[in-house]
Amino acid sequence: MIEAFAGAAFVAFGVAAGVAWLVARNASRLGLQDVPNERSSHQSLTPRGGGLGIVAGVAAGTLVLAAAGIRPGKDLGVLLAGSAVIAALGAIDDRYSIRARYRLAVQLAVAVAVVILIGGADRLPLPPPLDVPLGWLAGPLAVVWLISVTNFYNFMDGIDGLAAGQTIASCAGVAIAVWSAGAVELALVLAAATIGFLLLNIPPARIFLGDIGSTSLGFTIAGLPLLAPAGGRSMALFGVAIGLTLFLLDPLETLARRARAGHRIGTAHRWHSYQRLAVTRGRQRVVALCLVFVGLVLSVGGGIAYRASWLAWPLVAVGLAAFAVERFLAGRTRDVAGIGPP
Image (cartoon, rainbow, N blue to C red; front, side, top):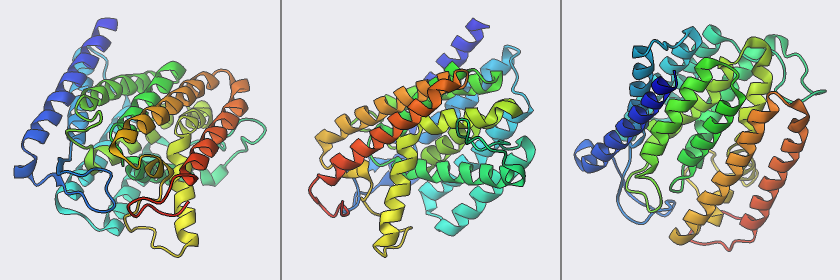
């Protein structure tokens, strides 16, 4: 068993790194080059679509496990299929740029299908006494969760290493919680594949995730709690959400500020707190490292809280405090190169 998991992780790592390298080498021929503009955090032409390496790595790692007799169950198979569709949509968007409403329509259809086949969380994903039954809202709220994290991941993929680092942190929390064999298997191969990609994405990045990477990672991470037993899904969802605190609160707060200012939500911008902090190339490394470290601490805590519920409310306090510090520091950053107001 251990040998099979180790082999799957090794293969996922190697395939992800190799495919990402191939995409980077052939980006110009594939039409996968990110041209910097006034809203970008990079200054030179950079390949994108490196998320294809992660998708390939996860697929290869899953096949290794299947060959060893560890085949994905029905729920895991549904989540993998949904993630594959989201990845395909992202790949098309990376190459041809799909209009936002069409992307959202496909994401909605996939999320609905996954929730119908797997189910949602029957209680509000908060610690007692706020874990009230959701009733008929369980399915719709699970759909909203999947779509929100999918797109928030895309919003947060703005500096090198941040989205990939958070993915590894979230996978660590899932592995610690061990709410189901399928979730641990997917977390293992996903983390290994993401590390393989990260070799080329560490600042200064030689390739970006692209939408194929950011959206499929967000969808997969959001779907992992749905692999928990029905009675434990609310706490599993809480554990993943608390690990994603900065990835959830930053986009929500930014969208609210832009709406108040009368800006169109869908237009490109640099209003996110992490973007304001990472105003120079040199600061991007420090910001990404600090935010990923916070994500790792919260994700590990969320994994432990799955079985030690007394830790849940302290984690909420830590997560809110961490975002408050990030927002305070971002508000003190001077407006540079078109970055939005504090």
